[in-house]
Image 1 (cartoon, rainbow, N blue to C red):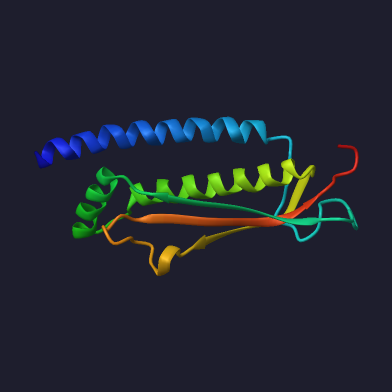
Image 2: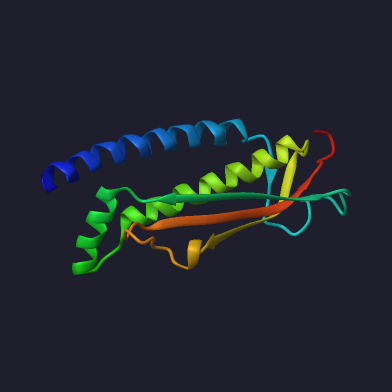
Length: 147
């Protein structure tokens, strides 16, 4: 039974992650025309005038299979690749949400983009031992001339 649960968790987790990554890729492609920068002011402009803070937040939890494999890796040491992919998904999702927020408000660019890992509930691990990845993306939305 435990082996069956691990195998089921692998397939369900893989399916869910692939579906999420596919949707994420489509959203990133859709938002590609938006200007984004980590510069403090809009690139190439002295002042764009009338900016607004925009935020994107994301919290993703590991699946049981990744959690199981990571516990095995923890015994021997080494890089926890399962958690690295979890962090990457959370960062990308938070950035997509930030850009969508800016676009919905009618802006064409975002500068001063910051990605900050967040601690949810005082710990990155919930009570059941599942690892959570939380990222907050923030920036200043602006209107780029000619767009």
